[in-house]
Image 1 (cartoon, helix red, strand yellow):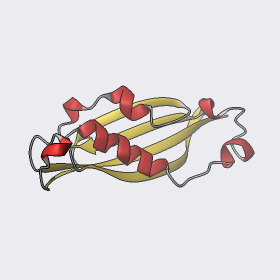
Image 2 (cartoon, rainbow, N blue to C red):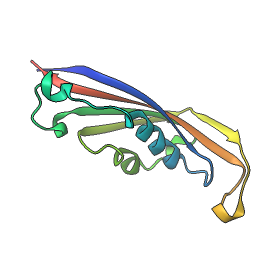
Image 3 (cartoon, rainbow, N blue to C red):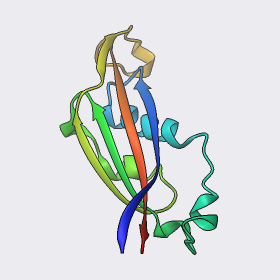
Length: 121
């Protein structure tokens, strides 16, 4: 059997308040998968269940060492999931709002790719 790429989706996520790279990363992954349907998983790849998909997630975000990986992967409802987090994204000056418990004016922007693989003969 060999792993074959089935689809690659890209997304962007922002944490405007709270300065939490996990929030930005999870939103980027959610954005990447928000508008897709994968009927080919059954019709072309002949999988019996979506948990048979192998999903590799790559996220670039400020302060990657602070990302709580399990929270990012929880966005994906199915599959055998792995996550690679790397430095990237952007820090943009916004406006701190006390009621949102902002630490500073920073907004974190993350980008993500979600690649679905299937194991084919």
